[in-house]
Image (cartoon, rainbow, N blue to C red):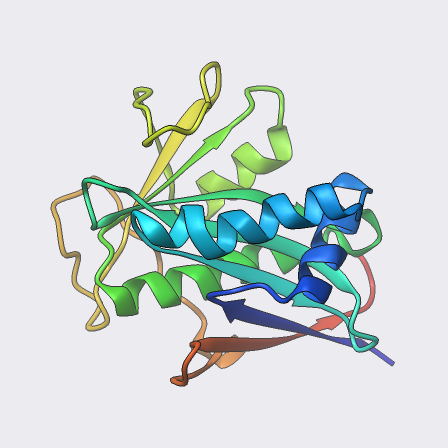
Length: 201
């Protein structure tokens, strides 16, 4: 029987969810790590701009994937996504791709036009993910106060809800498979995606 994976988009993190994310990504759920993550979610990311989290969890409620998106402080149509991580035992099941799809759907609704990320030159899997998702390598530019020197910068031109690009760009995303995505409009906004997790492929 295939396992059901749920992907949720949330504006804020509960203490319990922050603990699970810290344990997954940094193998440390001490109060120091949890408080730093929650402080970013509640204050740093929301005070000067906006942010949200994309969390993948299994049927037992364990967090098995996470990424976050952050709005640029000066260019409100420019967003960044980072810290994408999937538990090793759940990799090669397109969970990272589907978390990214959920984030893009949310960003399209908010009027974002560009999504940016930075990748370590040695992270071949992440570079391949960016390219397969329609991201284009661009000359390095700083994003607010984030420290990503030495990384490869990728950008994706986001189409609007009607499918037309909002700004000129060299390449846009392909059609997002909506059959995988169900979006509800509540506060905070939630996107849920059910992904069968079974054989590696």
